Length: 200
Image (cartoon, rainbow, N blue to C red; front, side, top):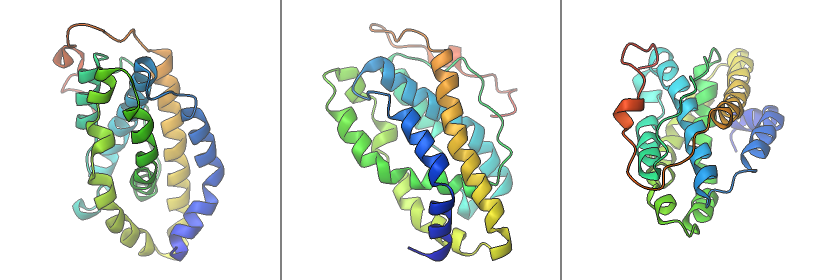
């Protein structure tokens, strides 16, 4: 493991562990819990993607995931979260480290999700099945290693803030969760935020 990544991994392990513990309560084979998982990640990406666009060079930006998450919520019959995404003021590259590193856990999550007896849960797999974050990982590694030593603390704090953001989004999604539809598909357009939103 390269020095900067090793530093980030060690320095953020407590926040990472707390976030993992929060998400470990979800059963991704169950429709309601899987809707919470997707909703929380959608909220997090809605908070982070404008930050990436504003603060990172195009070549360093993580791939957009919010659209895939919205499609999966639609397939599930859950619709988009009614909760507002939180603001993120941390370092963008630190947050990109958290997003990129999440692909390592996707194989385990995909296996749990794929064992669902619910066909609609299994069909909502665009986000978990996407190879985009794995493909982005080498780009992120190079960007992290180029961070000056004097700036690594700022990057680390951004990563800590991003882990906390995902946990916060899970709490917001849980507090605002609506029953998941079992019949007709949800009208996503009716639930999408207005294009006047600062996060669009």
